[in-house]
Image (cartoon, rainbow, N blue to C red; front, side, top):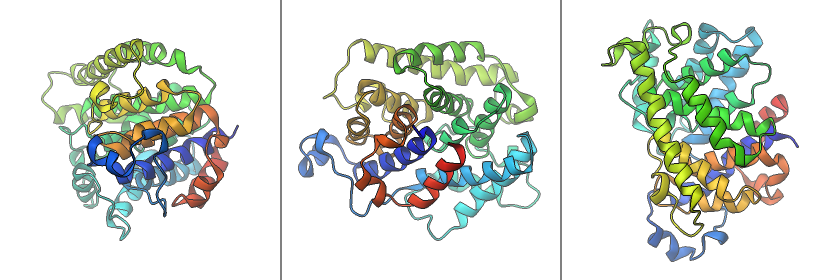
Length: 332
């Protein structure tokens, strides 16, 4: 199946499909492609900061695992370095998010604690567009998984909803790669959110919550899980009355914020669980943050179907193909 390879290729393919349509409304997209089912992969198939930051996280996690079992400092140091390297790179020209740019600038300051660099009022989708590699790492304990997913978000996006949505995004990849049936996902995700609603892991997050306005760490983290539970309600309602020809951004949100990117990306996958190519096309043919939505849809579809989900011609053309395949081989 090569589910890790399928995840990473699908993420980049969705990203490249959505790169062209991001910032366009449905009427504008329809001028050059009237039918979402025929949305072409651009030539060349260039990606955005979504794939670039996914690879930055992947490099950081690979380094962390080479040094031993995952723990906060062991994760923070190499991932922080990779995020800052991305920020400084001349290739960082793909409309990067303001929160990522601001936080990485602060992270580059020698001696600054990461909690002081984190933007605690930002829950932009930059938190979870890049988190898929966490869902692919083998042999993590549940605490390592949760802590790594939240910490990679918190380095830039410290809002509790960004943390929770990142964990749910990584969990979706993990569950699908482990063989969970798509129809079972909403219930499993809701169960996880409810079970973790008031659990703030200070071992992984330190005093991050103290930089926000909540009365306690438990109140801080519950705020994030509650917003994710609310968007899961919207997802359930959408699945109860599925519509393939409605702009998905009108149903579960435009995707500029973390929980909406997660829900809308998952909606597009669950509407077309047996047709990965159609799923990423539906996601990219949308009026919101199309590249981030489609990259998440592609990651979910790839985790479910494996590397064979994607047309060979698309795989050959995708930017960063060799590095994506390298990480896929490592985690497969």
